[in-house]
Figure 1 (cartoon, rainbow, N blue to C red):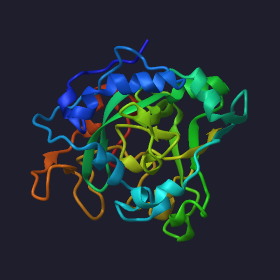
Figure 2 (figure 1 turned 45 degrees about the vertical axis):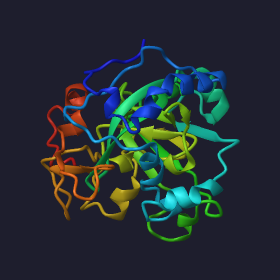
Figure 3 (figure 1 turned 180 degrees about the horizontal axis):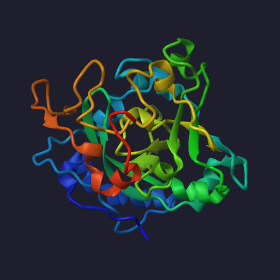
Figure 4 (figure 1 turned 90 degrees about the horizontal axis):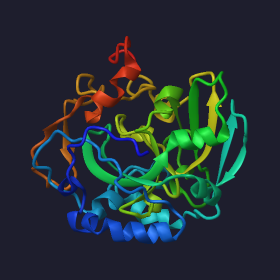
Length: 303
């Protein structure tokens, strides 16, 4: 049964309304290619009224993927060089069935749903994105999580010949990320394989990326090739680069500013140069669903 949560995101809130209205036909094409589209899929929540819709082009041309350059349009310019087939994901560490998992085999075993989520960048801009993907929990269950596992570590592809940004020491490559196990197993946490029913574009993390909607976008690691179950908190790229500004948890929190800017408000992409900023919601609006994960924690210390 598809996971359900508070429903106050409307179709009109989604990037490119016209394309979104045609998503069922798009999904039919995806399903014909071997993906399973869940009917009556879940809907995310969004408390803000009068959203200015983005365009499909916004999602695919305005993003951070430093493996292809540091400009917002660099990924769209250069990601076409990335080879995404064949693709395998190594799952190892504290699992019953470690090994290399072929992407096609993974997809044959997963239930793909449409998930409309807010996306909040740490740079204080935001979008609403209609992802297609499956719950990370289902993939971890496939590998068999052992009782000693406490964290999940992720690693991005390292291929400098195709990912030109990796030729420069902007970060330590390959890009790595991590979640606590209960965060990873939460039903809101998905591995995205597409947007609008289409295969995930290279610049958005093809063919497989993590999406954790209550965390800043850089936690949603792209083009994943390795997942490791471990009993120790794993290193994460931005925390390694600057632990003063980027914590392990990186939950969206309007009450905890970045060291160089406020996180109290955000700019919605597509709203124009002089668009009014809107208040940022605690845990990006998913507080009802995930706040319990952090009971007893000081989220200004564990940022």
